[in-house]
Length: 138
Image 1 (cartoon, one colour):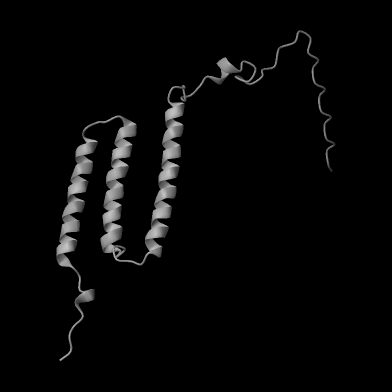
Image 2 (cartoon, helix red, strand yellow):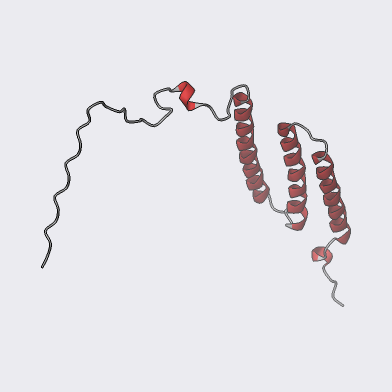
């Protein structure tokens, strides 16, 4: 009699645990959205929760938990790059916050560029000559 290899059987308990964790973090996301935190804190907390959920899905359902060493290294490098870009964007927002980044009145800052030039009326403007009439065809 041949033994069956149970290595490829789905671990139902693990899947149910991950499902429960995803439900918990979804509820946590909804609860955090009702706290009405300031926008930067709300975005950071929302991204943190979303990252945890994405990590759970990737590790368990995409079977990355038991992968060889190369794939996690690539994923860690990509995650580091993504976090670096997010940090640069957040720092840029922090540095620009003290400044007025709304619509600025261009006319106030550059009086010569604020409006379209208008024609000034002249006292004795010569009349334009009339166009010659076209000859009639027979």
